[in-house]
Image (cartoon, rainbow, N blue to C red; front, side, top):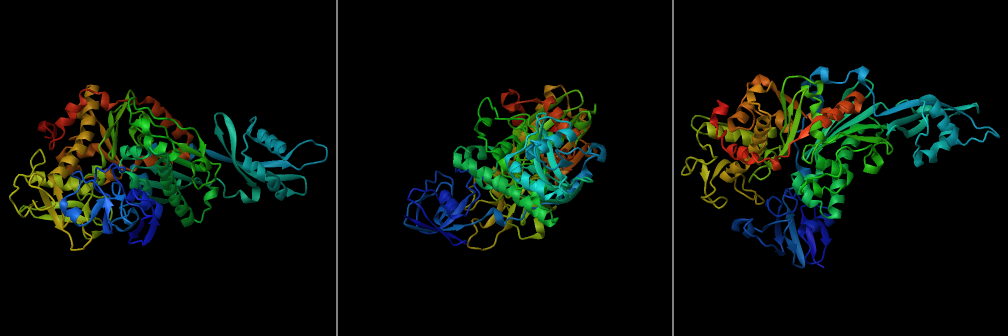
Length: 639
C-alpha cells in the first residue's frame, strides 16, 4: 500500500490507493482545518505535495501558480502514488487566539439582572444523612436504609439511585459508621421530572468540598468558553476560552452539518467538542486545585446545531425543509452519558433553543438584557457571528430570527482572512496621502486579516473614496494600491496591505484584500442588517423606535461603532443607545448554573419568542439586496 509521510510532524501512515489525503491525515493523527466541511469549495485546506503524486481535479479552484508549486486541497486530493511526502502548512493548535478573561463580562451586565445570594438555587444540592446501622432481624438492606433516610430528610418517595452508587453504598456506610449505631454520609441529588435522582454519595467527612463549584459553558461555532464558579458566593474564580476543535471539520454550522452526514464523522464532531470542553474543565480545576469529579453543577448554552453535535444527534434535518431539529428543550442527561469530565452522574443543564438557527446561545444571552426584566422599552439584541442571531421586543412581544452571515466575520471566505489570533491585522488606518498602516494582534508580523480589521479597512477605503458604494476600487491603475499579478486577475483587483516574507512555504507574496473579498464581506453585513430591517418592518417600527441595542459576542465586543455604521452593519443610532455585552451566552450560562429563578426565566423567554423564518419571508431578499451596498442603497438611513 502507498506510504504517506506528513511533515513537519514526521508521522507516517499506509493507506490504499484512492484514499483521500484528508482521511489519510486523520489515520496518521494529523489534521488540517477544512472550513467548508470537505466540500472542496473554499480552497483553505491547502497542503504541499513535496514528493509523489496525487489525483486532483482542479475545476478552477486553484490558480496555475499554486498548482505548479505543488499545492492541493487536502479534502479533494486522492492518494495515487506508492510514496508521498506531504507538508501540512497550518494547524489550529498553532494559533493563539485573542482570548480575554471573560470574568470581567460580569461588569458589562446590569447588576439588577445578575443572581443575588438569595437567588442561589443550584441544579444539584447536597444533604447530610444519618443512617441507622444494620441489626439482626430488621429485614432492611443498605438500599432500604438509604431510601428511608432520603425520604425522611427530603420528604420524597422513590428516589432514583444509579447503579454505580448502589455498588459503592455498602462500603460507604461501613466506613462511616460510628460506634456501630449509625452512619453519617453526604448525598448529592437533583430533581428530574419531579423525581429525586442521586448524583453521588460520600462519607460525611469527605463531603466538605462537595457542591462548592460549578461550571458555565458557552459552545460557540468558533470558540468554546468556560467559567469555574465558586457556588458559595457566586464569584468566577477561573475562566478560559479555546478554539472549538470542530473548526477543522468546517467553519460554519452548515459545513459541519454536511460533514456530519457520515456516522463516523458525526462521532468525530461529538468527540471534538467534548474533548475541547473537557480540556478546559481539567485545566480550570487543576489551576484551582479542585477534583473535577467533585463538580456537580454545569450549565451549557449553544446554538441548535452545536447542541445536536454535543449530544451526537444527527443534525441533517436542521438545514432541510421544513427545518426541524431533533430537540429544542433538552432534558437533564448525565455528564457521563455525554462524555464530560465532571462527576459522571451529575446532570447537565442545556439552555433551550427556539428554532433551527435561533439557539440556546441567544436565549441565554437574553438574560443579560432588559428583555429579562420585562421592560416596556423596545430593545434589539444582536449576536454577530457566523450565524447571526437577533431578538427584538419588550415586555409585550418578542421576535427572533437568524441569518446565515457565513464565516466572513471570522475571516472565512476572505483570501487572506483568518481568525483573531497573533499576527492578524485587527485595525487599519489610512492617512490623507492614502498610505495604509496596519495594526496586528500581539504586534506580530502580519499574516492575515481578521473580521475587525476587515471592517476597519473597508470603512477607511470608503471614507477616502478608494472604493465606491458597491465595494469596487475607484482607481485600478494605481500600482501603490491595486495588484493585478498572478494572484488576482484584472477582473478581481486586490489592494496590497502588506508584503509577505520570502518564506518558501508562503502561498502568496502579499497580504491583499480583493474586490471579491469585499463582496463576500458585504454579503455578510447585508445578512445582518437586512434581518434587522425586516424584523422592524414586520411590526411597523423604525430604527428611531429602539431604546437600546445590545451587541453580543467576542467579535461584537471589539466592534468600532463608527466603522460598523460607515459600512452599514448596525443601525444608525447614537452611540449611547449601544451596549456591548461581551460573551452574553456564557454569562447566561453563569446565571443558570447559580439560580433556578434564572433557569425558569430562560425557559419563559424561549417560550415567548416568535420565530421568524427569513427563508419564507418574501421581502427579505429585497432588504438583503438593498443592504449589499455601502452603507445602503437608501443612504438617508445613515445620515
